[in-house]
Image (cartoon, rainbow, N blue to C red; front, top):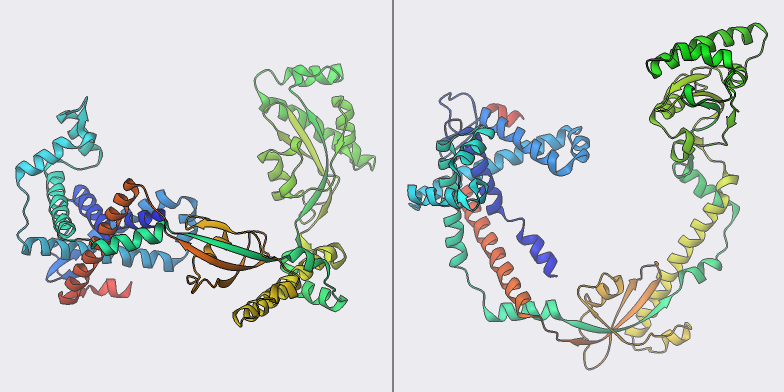
Length: 509
């Protein structure tokens, strides 16, 4: 519960607005915020213009920020034009809020003196060396950001003014003792429960299914039974030539003479030999040049069993090798099998590979997946039966038929105490049940971690306690949330009263 409150307090609108103020003015200065070109604006806020160029720049900044946060996921999101359009609209909305906030602060005559700005700069650790303000470091950091002292001072002045407004809102807020007490009672509360479990596995074993049910499920869920593309390959692995002991001496010397500089020469030399070998084998109608290559290299041919991208044999688990197997013309779709070996350079030596057999991706036959489908259907049937049985028993108990459990050959567990922070779904169900009345348990249905249907009896609600530091944190979070609500209300009212006009291009976008 406290974690949820803390998470909520970390997403306050004031933080977004403050971030916009400090970032936008540091990077651009006040000048680009308002443009003299009356035909080129994104929005007018009470006559104050937000230029399209300014919106474009802040939109780019927001994209970079999102990319840093989301990583590869951001690239997938940006493939959707709708996402980028919403992100741009949100950026403009934030800029409008910023403009309204600037105007509101001005109307309230909130001002920050030069001395306050100076002191704020001196106190920022980023500009300090050994605990003291370092002017050279300060200027260097601003220069690296593409800014200068005047821009930063103006940005900081607006930041401090906005912070002063937020502090004013927060300081006028108060929490009633009853409000705090009620929340603390909820957070610290513990509950006593008993439960009875309807065993899904036991019901699954009793289920029967027909051939028609098997076939129907298979037809409707073929996409769930895709067999990936698979290969069987033959290959030889040739280590660095200087380490070979069994290679034919004349061949080794021939290769060695061309291998004095690097592996590229080694590969070129072997390819030249290999092409000659393939020509000789073709002339004698022998399609397997790999055999002759293995004999000349003094190594044995290795053959794999069937494998897919998900279980590549360790000796072939290199990007260069996988690229040849899965992405090159060696597959049966682009070339013949068994007579088109490929030489691949590895970190240490060469690998000559030949694809022997290939199975394209496709749907597994019903015979292969019959056992799997049988298990799925039986489980589904058992879950539905347990759900119906649980609901029926619960209705009987609520109707006063307390022997419903024993009639169903179910037993209640011993009593146990759970708290609100428990991740157990049974405990979470218990905290959604109304308190017991007149000593009579409150009943509900749940599921446990294994998917079993569980009847839950809430027998007692216990008042708990919290350490004072946690109580203080709750009060702090409550104040932050109230500040958030008041700040939202202020912005909503400012928008309601404001005259906001959007530029023509902004409306189109």
